[in-house]
Image (cartoon, rainbow, N blue to C red; front, side, top):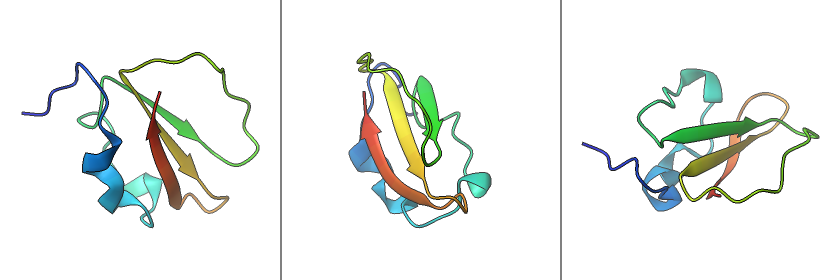
Length: 66
C-alpha cells in the first residue's frame, strides 16, 4: 500500500511523458492537483499534495510535491 500521509514525487517520476488521461491519480497522493498550462494556482504549501503539470496536449511534463 502507498503511504498517502505525505507526498513523494520521486516514486511517480516515471509517469512524466505520459498523458494525464491515462493515469489513475487516486493512489498517487492524498491530494492531487493537475495543472494545465497557464492555469492559476494557489501558492499555499500542502505536504500531502502532488502537483502534476501538463502541456496543452495533456502530456505530463513535471511532478512536484507541495
